Length: 80
Length: 281
Image (cartoon, rainbow over all chains, first blue to last red; front, side, top):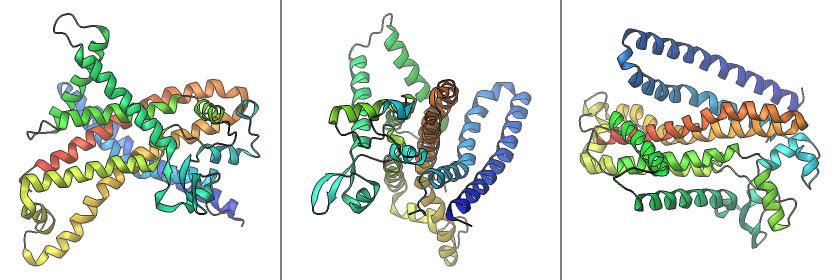
């Protein structure tokens, strides 16, 4: 397999796993936010702040992964 | 469209994207100082390479918003406020509310710090919404060098985001030592979560990576989000005239990311500094 093909395959795997991980996490997070604000609507603004804060922790690894994927695809350090 | 308008004919889409991801780097190469003409030359410059484009735009934006705030604060009135003062008050109130919600110690430095962080990072992120070829083409026109590298969004340069994160990290260390003393600061690493002296190495092993991961994750979150967004803009720019609706759609989505990342950077700065101010732990 050429380096290009390997890189694309790797990029697809990284992207897929990043997407799957964050999807599960954000599903849980958003569901719990709605649940929480349905139970106590007066706490909704506070919960939303916390939601965004936790969302930052959730998406950091996957966004780093996506950044690396873009680096691999468009400015591949292994070629040349 | 990008290829049609630019003076440089790009050999491939990869070259177009990687050219737009290159920095205008100033440094010493082959024994004399000058701008790098290729990524290889920029890599040769080593430590003393300076990304002129990032510095220029970030400093311009920083000085710009500082001057704007200063001018507005000079004309502040207690009577009927104008639209500009209203806007600034709205912004300041939003930041103050965020600080009050997440920072429970007493420190007059935190709210101005949060406002500065938020405004500056928001403005630097907003450079992403300027069409990707405008600023590089303008720079090429001014300098007359048709193969000039110019990266317009400062937060897609990891040096900027790491610089912010390290500054926050140093402030966390400073306030930790100021509030808890050197002993209290070290005790946080050595006596937590297991308060036994013979478990201190284990405690250090548990606590230290989390502490060091703070600035790294803070920097990489902002950088990763902005870099990924920028690359998608660049890829869309390769599509010819069909790029216009796609650009619009992605820009609308990206406004959310821009504001959210600036807000998150501010919030995490406040939260980390709040942890530094907490005595029990």
